[in-house]
Amino acid sequence: MFHGGIPSALSKCTYLQILGLSFNDFSGAIPKEIGNLTKLQELYLGRNRLQGEIPRELSNLAELELMWLSENELQGGIPQDLGNLAKLKTLQLSQNKLTGTIPSQLGNLSSLQSLNLSFNRLSGSIPSTTFTTYTLKFVGLRGNQLSGALPFFIFNKSSLQDLDLSDNALSGEIPANICSSLPFLEYISLSQNMFHGGIPSALSKCTYLQILGLSFNDFSGAIPKEIGNLTKLQELYLGRNRLQGEIPRELSNLAELELMWLSENELQGGIPQDLGNLAKLKTLQLSQNKLTGTIPSQLGNLSSLQSLNLSFNRLSGSIPSTTFTTYTLKFVGLRGNQFSGALPFFIFNKSSLQDLDLSDNALSGEIPANICSSLPFLEYISLSQNMFHGGIPSALSKCTYLQILGLSFNDFSGAIPKEIGNVTKLKELYLDRNRLQGEIPRELRNLAELELMSLFDNELQGI
Image (cartoon, rainbow, N blue to C red; front, side, top):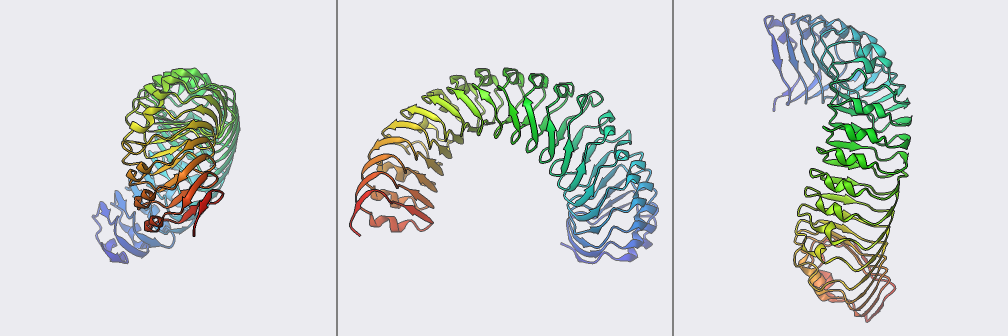
């Protein structure tokens, strides 16, 4: 927990090869005198509160192999003279307040393997010279204000393993031959930019790819079925685009896939039943599309599934009981579809379930009296805007972690159970637009965390 300034007298340690001052509370400027440590090989100043500009004198450190200045409050531009550090392998300047453009001279760093300039305020285009270094493995430029098209040279870096250009203002199309010269690429994220056009089928040639992030752009056209050839893929982010067509059944070949996010597109057709073969899938996000048909019962085979979101589609039919047989399931979102029939019995035996949203459908029947007997960790449940009837079960009080209870816009009748007053973590209670009778239970005053109570449009009496 050292604090204060970094002494300029460190320059008198003329034989110093490694200087580690990271993860402290140092403030003030980086002393320019550090540039006199001509034998220095590794410089660790990250995770402090250093201000001011990066001294151009650091370019005198001819033996330097690693410079870590990340997670400070450094301002100004990146000194172009840093391009003189011929032995530099790692340059970490992320999470500062750096401005200006990326100096083209960084392309002279012939030994560079890792470049991280993420989460600064850098602008302008990405210079093609940035990617001329043949040793480059990692490039992180996320969270800046970079604009323009992707530089052509980026796709000729056979050494590249990790490329993150997300959260910028980059535009244009992805080259059709994107993976022709990237045989070892494991991670690519172009999310949160302004790319358009189709997703190239040639992405399938990045055979080592584990994470593919193209979300929050303006991509259109179909999802290439060739993506199903990326057998090492673990995470697939294609959400928030304008993708059309059907979900390719070939995606069921992605045996290592743990996350699939295709939400907020214009996808049509049914949910491929073969997706039930993805044994390692933990998150399946298909919400806000135009999907039709029923929920395939085969989704119950997803033995690792934790989060399932099919909300805001045009799905219909009953909810298959197999949907809730997975013991790891925590989140289920089926809101805004056309589901009908009764609640499947298995839904109330999911001890892992924390969040259940079945609102805005055409579900009917009564809520089982033992609704919370096997749901000890349930925090959110919404059955609003359906056609449920009968009484509200007093057993809801056994959902002791419940924070939001939504039962509005149904046909519930009878009294409000006084036992709801025992749900002490409850923050929002929606019972409006039903046919509830009797008085408002005084026990509701025990709900110390309650922020919203909606009981209007019922038949309640008393004061």
